[in-house]
Image 1: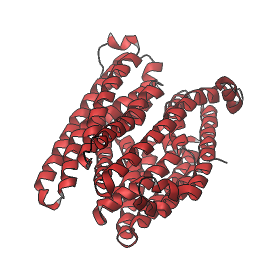
Image 2 (image 1 turned 120 degrees about the vertical axis):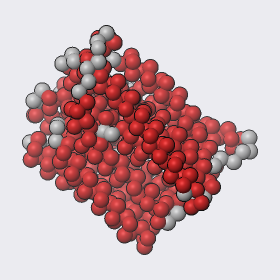
Image 3 (image 1 turned 90 degrees about the vertical axis):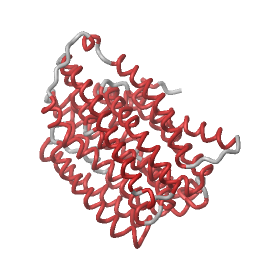
Length: 440
């Protein structure tokens, strides 16, 4: 049996930086792979048990919670990836402690405020919302601050290189826990509606947050506990705002189609399409896995002026991600209908939208992790402009295409606004950072 160390040596070619990337990246790849299968299983279980209508409520509200939780984090999650490695490298313990204190408390406060606003809007428009969607959305507003803080803690752990513990709550504990609770309801003959699934999420995310908080404390150098906090809020806000635009745009590009289908068509179609969207997201798990460790590594190399090393890592990440995406695309081309039917016969209708989404991902992968490179090398302004423009284009295209073409229209809008921005940002990487982020 081939040892991991031997495999790493072959992949990296005795390159120290590549070995460092793959040693963390492979571990992250395995965690994400297991997590994506767990997420796939959770959605299949819920879709089968809940039915299309209730699952649509759950998918629609979950998409909304993900978008709002990202807004509540205000770019501070990406700031953690960029700033914390530098604070540790330069032993700036006061700044590190101040950053952690300010970001975690501010994320919680803002997310609570957004949650209360959502509750007020729901109450004001109660007569316009179906009972099932209303109850699900109410519990979604409660889930929002818990989810926002959990993700912020996750990004702090990622900045410290704790990849497995950073993701185990969201990638494994949450889908497996929700699946088990839903199965228990089903075994005892109780129906599972959208609000039940959100309540399951709240319970599991709270447990995960407790573990994450403990791991965060353990991940910090001992000097942090004995140092007074130093706050530079204006600088943190200056860095976080464009990073929020980048992260927010990326999130909106993956969730707007699901939300707008629910608005322009119905939440049943939103639920069916969401499965295709998540399967397409599963196909790029190698990109996400390598990016989890690659982001702080790129920030570190850039801060040290090691541009040649940065270029080598960027090229490696692009090629590995592309090599993993090609077989996934072929698999869904051949077996996509069968996979979708596992969720229920109605879900097979999302086969052609799935192929369109995969085409967009495949084209985007040719240009590498250009958005991440820009944000980790102090060029987040360029990434923000491109991605904000893409979000506007995505919303316009969805609004034009969904009423006439339904799920296919949403898929076309998302595929176009996934690939074109990445190609544009790769040009900025070349002109501003001086490296080539593409696969060739």
